[in-house]
Amino acid sequence: MFRLSALCFASLVALHAPAAFAQEGAPAAMSASEQALAERIDAVIAPYYKADAPGATVIVTQDGKTVLRKAYGMANVSKGIAMTPDMAMRLGSITKQFTAVGILMLKDEGKLALDDDITTFLPDYPTRGKRITIEHLLTHTSGIVSFTSKPAFFLTEGQDKGVAEMIDFFKNDALEFEPGTRWAYNNSGYFLLGAVIEKVSGQTYAKFLEERIFTPLGMRHTAYEGHERSPGPRAVGYTKGWFGRVTTAKPMSMTQPYAAGALASTVDDLARWDAAITAGKLLKPATWQKAHTSAVLADGKLTNYGYGWQVGKLRGAPMVAHDGGINGFSTSALRLPQQKVYVAVLSNTDAPKVQPDMVASQAAAIAIGNPFPDFKPVKVDNAVLDAYAGTYRIDANATRSFKRDGDKLVMQRTNRDPVTLTPFASDSFVLPNSLTTLVFARNAKGEVSHLTVHSQGSEMINRREP
Image: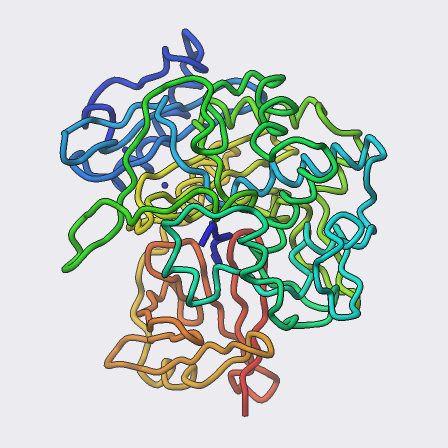
């Protein structure tokens, strides 16, 4: 929920319609090379979306210039309304970078410090003798239980609730770990950051973002859902119903995701957001740099997450990114600072066949001239597949288990459904509908000892258990 995907999005306005470049946020004309680049990106993206199904809007900019701005599929399936590039959609967890910047603006103004204990601003919050700081909330290292992981959350997600009432929902749960010692994605932390913004600024979270970020940057179609300032087209959100049928997503009150995931926007406004970041607006240069730098745990390990941004690499290039998942919508946005490339993908289904982070990653890779390979399937001997079978440790709480099923290798991660992997080399496999790859390795004795997972610009080694 409001996820950073572990891993990580609209047919053309008509299936074979001309590119929709001459609209808001798009250039009036493109050079032949720019047009060719747009066509290469579109050729990869378009097949992911059906003309009569929920779709997506996509924007790709390079060095401040729009390279691709397109819509695919349907904004409203039942009414036959095609998606257009100016459609607003829920952002889900991309909201977190706006919340983080709000906190950092207050920090730059001297109104708070990142090492302040949260009880400085929320004196009634029970920290159980532990020191939980603003920075812990920003970096998902607080140990506080994420409220969206609680089963009871889904029973009342359609109800309007106040900020204090929502905090009461999770504040008395025991900490999951000592603050600063682990990284665990956490919506509660960003909910609390919204409450801190309100306490320090004296404004509601919605009004603070409107006056301090959205209005100054000309983001006319971005708002806390329910507090929109400019009416505009809005896509309907969908999910997968019984027997795989597309159905309208379950209602959710945006009072519940709040500062962790309640914003709605357009790809044009997100491109304006990126332009402001690139220009160093809103924050001091050192603060921007810190926001895009991986946090470090108490044992010195990197988390690959800064303040509201995932920190990693894409095809070897430094990348900052974030994904989002919320009722009816899936989203992804990434930036390659060195190549000055930005991609945003907003999808109006929370159960897309292809996740938005995959679409965004492929578009960005093409834009920098280093596209992903096709991962063409190859045949792997059953004996080799048997050698890979076993359990591999991810962390203290999760494993990946592998077994051969006929001539296929099946993987099951803790508390997740099994998936059949596709081999593209004798030791290398790709997860279905993703760019996540797993490469098995052997020790000096020739025994399979571990695997390396390549996902969203990061590498993770999983050791085989005895």
